[in-house]
Image (cartoon, rainbow, N blue to C red; front, side, top):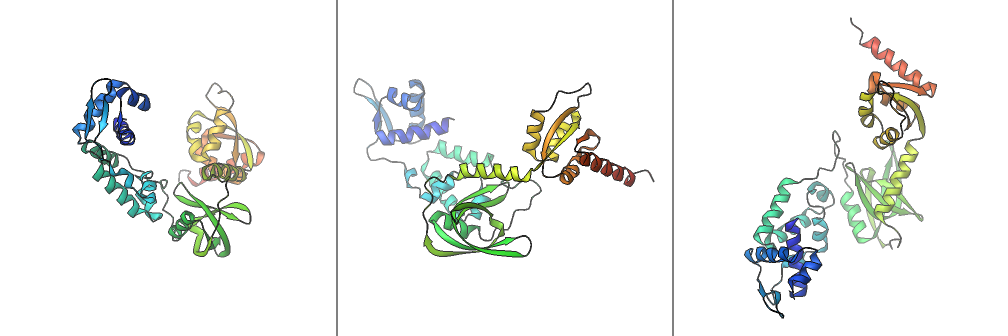
Length: 324
């Protein structure tokens, strides 16, 4: 994208102060002709650049001139990476940081790049929660996030089930937003555990700092934790035959990833397009309830309990909806 390349060129010249077109072309991995076009665009936008021909010449940036982009604070810089998700930043208590970052960017960028930044904001938006899901009430998220930033130990009160509460002293290591729900990775008794932030009813700083494990990587840990959670949730396997229309519905009726895996390893279609497949499910009763969404496009093969439950559900549905 040209706007991104122009910003890169601007920072490169700010760092070098002077360079030849060939040097800049190598650094930005573009042609010299592109460099000259971009220099002309920056000059037209008001950046004090000029070129000096000859062996000792090059492209120069006016001595003492600097873009103020490097005046961003740490929180503002972090906010820029999440631009387009204001609801996420608001929950983290970073709305002011986002506003400050955007103001500095718009005040500092040349007019052409400023309009590009506005255009991006007008045309792209991230809505984190999934469809048909009411955003969770995460009353303690700001306090938890502050403890994550500051590596401060927390004393939390955590709700289990409907009425049971437990208290824990934790080392908050990182936050993950998954399908509109916030999760906290926290060190407890030498292990890393997962907590749903909307179930944290109290979060009090202890005044103690903690040291993050040197080998802890949040994204890598979350990938492993999510895979383990899926393995724990999908404890049974069923064998079914599914029709062509049912194959399209299956990923929406059961666990999406499990359905995709099952379809990828399914047997060849018969003359009518039906395929036999093995599907990982939470339990037989849950699978039966989910698979009824396929209607007449599914046949339970194994275990017998699944076939019986599907038949029972089908007969009940037919009886309930028979002509009066």
